[in-house]
Image (tube, rainbow over all chains, first blue to last red; front, side, top):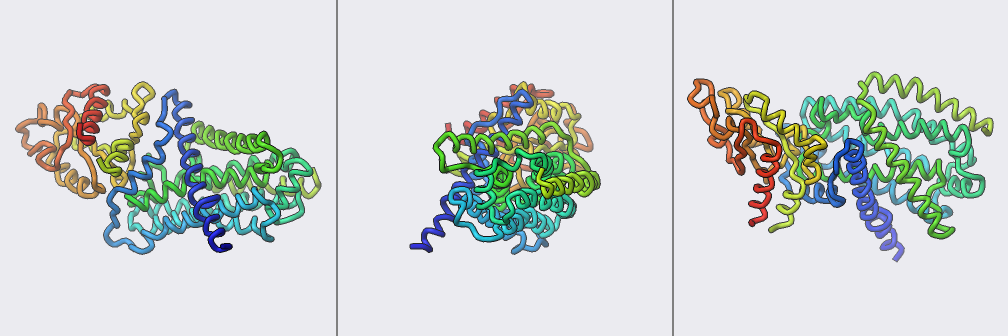
Amino acid sequence: MELLKSIGYFIIFPGFLFTAVVGLLASWIDRKVTALVQWRKGPPILQSLYDIVKLMGKETIVPQGSSRLTFLLSPLFGLSAVILVSTLLWRTIISPSTTFLGDLIVVLYLLTIPSLAVIMGGFASRNPLASLGASREMKLILAYELPFILVALIPVIKAGTIRMGEILSYQLDNGIVIGSLSGIIGFLVAILCMQAKLALVPFDMAEAETEIMGGTYIEYSGAPLAIYKLTRAMMLFVVPMFLVCIYCGGIDFGHGWLHILLGVLKYVGLLVVIILIRNTAPRVRIDQAMKFFWGKMTGLAIVGIVLAFLGV
Amino acid sequence: MSLKLKALTKSPWVFHICTGSCNNCDIEILDLLTPRFDIERFGMIKVGSIRHADVLLVTGAVSRKAGPRLKRLYEQAPKPCLVVAIGSCALGQGIFKGSYNMPEPVDKYIPVDAYIPGCPPKPEAMIMGVVKLIEKLRGK
């Protein structure tokens, strides 16, 4: 019975099915808001689902001379990592007392795997442009991971614990982390790192449609491409939710529907901020991105950490 | 109609191949993405890689160099894949008919599912052509 229950956690709620549905909805919000910003009408609400179903029905081409197994398996690595993160995160949100020590570290590790899967797939596809994209993605990971981990430490310092459940309950008692100066600094840095993590426009040089034609995804077609698209949609749900959790107090299920609505609004608000950044910023070069993350962002994050230690 | 085809008609991703046109048709194709026409309403987006394509938009009277490449691109596209020939040149070579460097029109190289005439066709005409193609797929 226990086994069935945990399988249910992974496959139905809050794992694969739930995350996929909300993620596809989030990617529809992304496209719709983008369209509204550009004074267009935008696609219908089921558009992301149509795309996935269509790609599932298309032929899958494996390029000649590519590493077949790696090419076909790497999308699945990314997908399974996102499912694990989502399960951990929602178990924490629903019942903060059931989590294990150091789950924050596990979540940070698992959030890197989708990018690693993209890199593996890009290099395995034996396409020069895909290799270029993959090498850019690799540099980008090196760049944004440092400030991202630093700002993930600010709530840890504030709450004095490395359990996500305890960070959540700390915020319930003492007010949310973003209410303090160090929290605001950390959150700003975290939003920009998240933009790079989700490969959205100022930092999308790994795929750069207009420059290297889809970059790492260039050789993918059919079902593997559908899995990549699904992973990206799910990341669009999971990563902002993670930040809402450690910075804005997550979704409070204990105190009536108004608090749940507020939690959902926090997520949607953050999502719209991401989309607006994506629509108003041009793409930067990889060296500019590295300078930006290792210079300004890391500096700000360190300032935030010092402030958090001082209790500001 | 199968689920596969239904989903295809709901989100046809287009890939644009220019086989030596004067770029007039190409500009009109880009017009479709502007706020005035906004084909993303129908789920159409322009993709960068041929592997993601569902519909190939071919413009231009195929030149001697472009012919084999057009054929190769068609073979690289994952099936099911549709081809739309846009503009007088792609349909019947237009003013280049009989020219020494334009051996044959598009439909002698690859199978074409829809023809959209005009020099260049209006964006409305292109939307009309694609609607007709989708109706044909749905078997109406």
